[in-house]
Image (cartoon, rainbow, N blue to C red):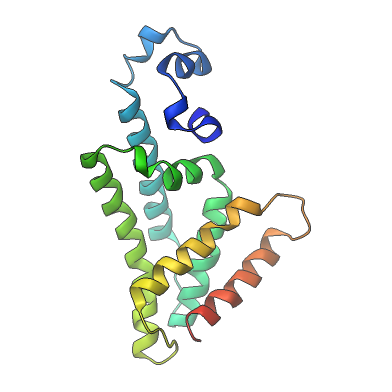
Length: 174
C-alpha cells in the first residue's frame, strides 16, 4: 500500500492509479479523491476489526475475556500491518467529518476493552486506578507489536501473545 510505504501526504492520485494499473482519470470512477480513499481504508479496517471481535468467543470471567481480547488484538493486527499503520498513523490527515467517524469506530472498539476492565474492577479481579487510561495504554501496547514483530524471528506469534497477555494482566492489576 502506497500510503503505508510513503505516507498519505507524499502519495499522488497519479501514483495510486499507476499502482492499481489504471489511467489517472479512470481512478476517479472509483473514488472522488484521495481523502475519500484514505477514509474508506480506515473505516473498512475498523469495521472489519469490530466485526471480527464480535465473532470472537469471549470467555466467561474478566480475566479470560482480557486474555481473549489481548490475543485477538495481536493476531488481527499482525495479519494487517499496512492497514494498521494507516489506521493509526494517518489520523492527522483526515478531514474533520471523516475524523469524527473514525474516532467513533475507534471508541466502539476501545469500549470493548473498557467493559472488560470495568467488569474486572467490579469483581476485584483487576485493580485499575483509571479505566480509560488503562484502556488506551493497553491498546497502544498491543498495537505496538506491529512495529517490531517479524515472522520467523526469535519469538513465535504464540510466544509473543503469551508474554503480552501476562504484561496486560499485570497492567490491569490482576
